[in-house]
Length: 366
Ligand code: GLU
Image (cartoon, rainbow, N blue to C red; front, top):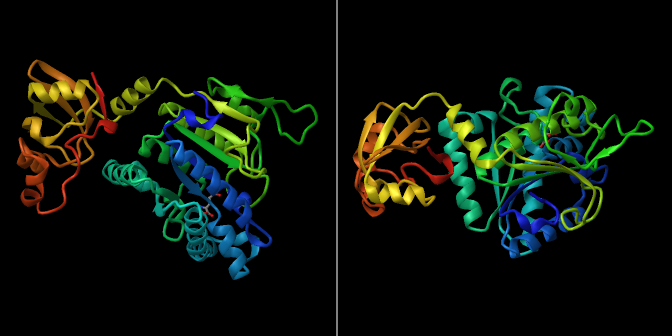
């Protein structure tokens, strides 16, 4: 799949590194205004874009006058992040607002994207925001995440967000235009435009450390991100943001080709342990599933097993198992919703219902 030119992918995650957002003078507002214009152009062409924005620590450290870019200690980094994040989201809201776009802030931790239940929450919120044509601006919740639970770099965070948002592509914008066969500062370094498989040879090319010294990224974390993305069926490009309007410039980049999406999603669900239970559905619901729709409570007839929200369940039609997916509800609540239409569900549950028993984004046909 082609990420450049842009229009080819319905949902895209753009990750922006700290060095592009912040310099000695503070926020690089003109550059940001350019990227907001790029996002607006894509939005009007029908593409849904979410931003993973770094820069909170770098910006906060400048405001607070902290040494080592705010990374001298975990406490410094967390204080810098808390200070920088509020300014960062304000700038994003302003530059996107100037283009007629609405920004929404999401701060996530590793757990939010790895724990199945919380993954479903983050995924549903992203889906709703993008469906409302809002631009989610996402960062790690650095001010509370402690060392052990931190992603630590937004490259991998962007790949996980892409998975959760059901995106088809990720662009990592930083100060480098892609992968080179050795440290790009060395003579004779050759740019790699396309990577079809990430093997030991490719991993060996990654140079350690962040060139700018501002973010915590570097090529190693970008290759890790590419592995996560490609394994989930999402294409990933590393491109330089050292130009104005980098999303419309046909700049040099490295594209990592994803594994086939259906196979990748199946592997992902299959890897999520054995099914904890099953939901039996009627013929109408079975047909709707085969057409790519979500499983609605109205078409479900019975529930078996003890499963919790986020657990994998088998979906059985009149003739046996037809699909596997992550349940949006605990078995107890799913059972109460059987055959019920969405209007009736809030009164039964006592809280606002989810849009489905199993969402199509978290479901594969067997
Ligand atoms: N979350 C960090 C920040 O906003 C950046 C992490 C990274 O450098 O990738 O400052």
